[in-house]
Image 1 (cartoon, rainbow, N blue to C red):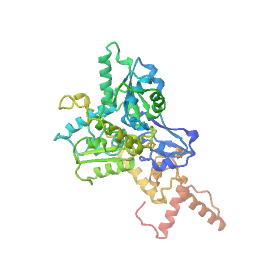
Image 2: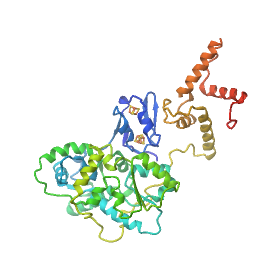
Image 3: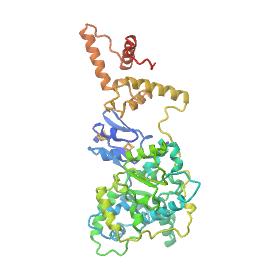
Image 4: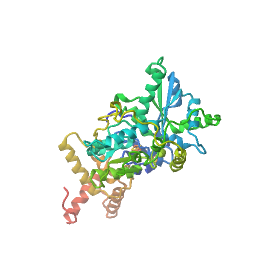
Amino acid sequence: MKNYQHSVSLDVAKCKGCTTCLRRCPTEAIRIRDGHAVIHSERCIDCGECIRQCSYKAKKATHDGLDKLNNFRYRIALPAPALYGQFDNMDNIGYIIAGLHAMGFDKVYEVARAAEMVSAYTRMYLRRKDIKKPVISSACPVITRMISMNFPFLCDNIIPLLPPIEVAADLARKEAMAEHPELASEDIGVFFISPCPAKVSYVKNGFAGEKNNVDHVLSVRDVYFVLIEKMKQIEEPAESTEAGMIGIGWASCGGEASAVFNEHYLAADGIENCIRVLEQIDNENIPTLDYVELNACSGGCVGGVMTVANPYIAQARLQSLKRYLPVSPNSPVKDEIPESAFAEGMVQYNPYNLLSDDRMEAMRMMADIENICTELPGLDCGSCGAPTCMAFAEDIVKGETNADECVVNMRMLFHDFLEKRRNGNSGDAVPLEKWMRMRKDTENAEGKTDGGNV
Ligand code: SF4
Ligand code: SF4
């Protein structure tokens, strides 16, 4: 996707080039060049895994600051349900709602309320006969982007419904305009309080097209530190939550899927587990399922890198917070999905790893990659600055690096050089690619090769 706006970035000054993030990036988007990490924009899915892994805090999530509140006459907060799990010893979500008002928000519309509506729409959608199963949730933007880049045959499995963030923004804006007819739409600022950078990218890139109603995305972490001080000053909150168990359950892995009231579901968390599940669905190597919920972060949204609390502790807090709440106080008026909730075509196949637009050229490059791979040690050590030998070979063929970055082969080359010196023939300096060809020719002459590669 051209001009994709990312929310994960690198502070070059802090990066030590240690390769930790390189090994953990699920899309092989990171390379080490000139001693520091570089993120390949077209491959990055903003999962935040590299932020989680970097001990030097060189990777960061970009999001909007609280100063953006000053740009609007009327401000609406959309707290993600994961926010509720951040606070210790809190037994009433009303404190959070009152605290958000004290921070300067004129209205609070809980995303958990919209999540209950989306759960109801999903149950209606699953009753249809003309849909491709298993239906995959559209709620996690990391997963939808991963599918759009890597799984062309699964794009149609994604439920064509807007995620709760978008439904909440739409309903909140409409309510505000009805309550305050004196306001123009541009006077109203809608702020999503997000646990993860992927939802920042979702908003920045307008995934919902014209239906995108969120103006800015704040981080749970930024809001937490201001909110906790405001909450301390509240003796008894005037409001209480309008969400129920189902809506708040969306914050943790399994909460969304269990709300479809259908036992043929699967819920997975952690990006590597999710990729494995997608591969199995793609290969039809999975039991019959109606619904699949995939959360890129461990534990679900509570595990996002813009949160404060340990995700499993946050999950335990949410369990106890929702214990006495009604199951689902927010449900659609009619037993049909409104047109406004649909987002047809939101996910389209958009491959990132095409070697060339020219098919013949791409095939030639693929053959070159395979040939170079046969000459590489296959250790996937990362010392060359690429995550695997295959990725390194691809980078060589694309002209982004050269073969003598392979330290293992360089070592062999050096030994070869020393050997020649010992024999009184230091020889000319031989580029590694040439040396690799020479070595292969020698092996061929000695009958050592498999004879399959040109
Ligand atoms: S983990 Fe990545 S970003 Fe962090 S220091 Fe190591 S190479 Fe740099
Ligand atoms: S955010 Fe995820 S996909 Fe992007 S560079 Fe970091 S680990 Fe890779």
